[in-house]
Length: 436
Figure 1: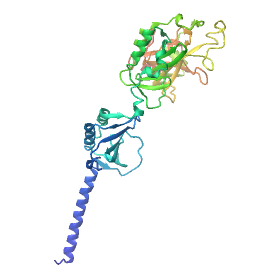
Figure 2 (figure 1 turned 180 degrees about the horizontal axis):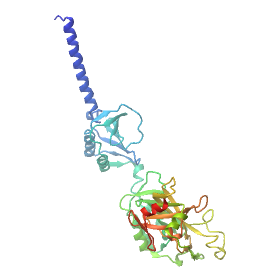
Figure 3 (figure 1 turned 135 degrees about the vertical axis):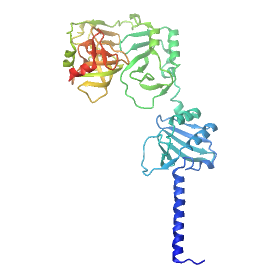
Figure 4 (figure 1 turned 180 degrees about the vertical axis):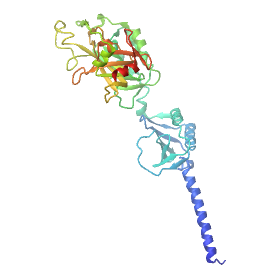
């Protein structure tokens, strides 16, 4: 066949057009394939998927055939497109290593609902984002946890309490009121520990600085104090700290109020022999303050939420009782017990600080067997939304104190109104006008 220059040029144009068409089809196929299509998983019988949770660090394996097929089918539903920028994206949700009888076949890492790493290459999900919740459900339905992970899950309180079979006394202290109850009856102690064992615990996977506690439970043997558990404040009802380690409750939160009410009321008979402790009531005349007075005398005004109470302490450097006899103590002038209340700031109304959490100090509380009750002190409840007027004693301890005792603390009854214990109410809009 003879081709002149015109025919040759025409043929070249046709061939180039065909090549572009094929290239576009191939490119479109590559950019719209799934994680499964990008691997050779379909060429093998997958017998195991090794899973790691990037959020908790938990790991395990899936060997259940039905779960494996569902996961493969799910990943096959999402078309992917290779990302132009291939830089390390850091954290991930789930890492999935696929294995056949002959060894590892491929790895897919779900970075988030929109990005997937397939064998070291990042792809963008085209269309509907990955349903992470459904993926999590599939994984949890078929995973067998590794030994190290299993050891950190489904823990029970009795396994965390030192010498749990030898406990002879349990005390429960309310972090706000400082009231405490004591159990010394062996049957009641066994029942309480059994009740606490009804709440499976898992080690909390992240560092967490808690802002006070709601209840403190101390466990004793004949030899003395052996273990301590605390329920957290804030929106952390599902967290428990046992002997300094934080755990998450895998189920409904512990209702320690119920346990507290079931114990016998504390009395001197529960105190160690030879130490009756000190009980002191403190009262003093207090100047009546108007709302204008509260505004002018307060360094900071906030709307916040009560998150917890800290263990009470004496006003000494180490927080321990002064080296004096009870008769030598000068309560209210030189010697005092302080209790710190954790408050999360929802809004600053006057002089905002560069922090969202504060510790407000009130006078009074209980340290060991010594208690001080101060008249006209404000009272706080866990989870209470409050309007608070307080002073900033810069460089001193305590740093933050409520202005005018009970007069400086109001309870928010809605978004616009706060009411004090004596019935005085404040409109937030009007208060903002006074603050200026």
